[in-house]
Image (cartoon, rainbow, N blue to C red; front, side):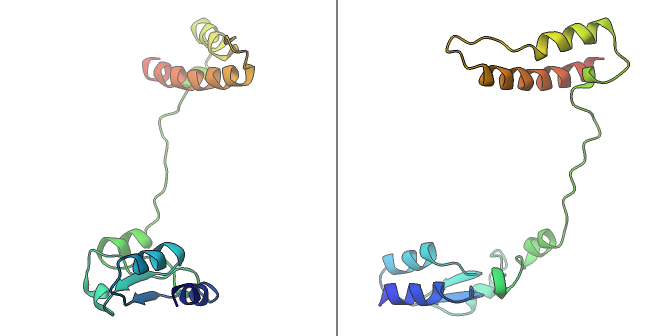
Length: 139
């Protein structure tokens, strides 16, 4: 039955592909949502490999990443984050009176009516980052 099959699948290493045959639309949905596999093909076998717009690849023991078209490129590419424009330039030397006043205003905790100093301090830091970014563009 359906429960035994799902338990059987989940008790073993994750399959590369899972093939489900059923006349019901609810049974495939149950397998898709309650199991983990590289891919699922409903009421057919292997044809999902021929659809280039679908990624193909495993999960866990059955493989790493997704392949086919752009998925292959993305899988084997590393997206490196680079920030070359500093955020909050007012925090760095050379210091001026303007930067000191701005920093002092932004970092001060504000008092909110409901008395949550922690939220106020966090809000102050967020505002300081935003203001620092804006000032960095102007200075």
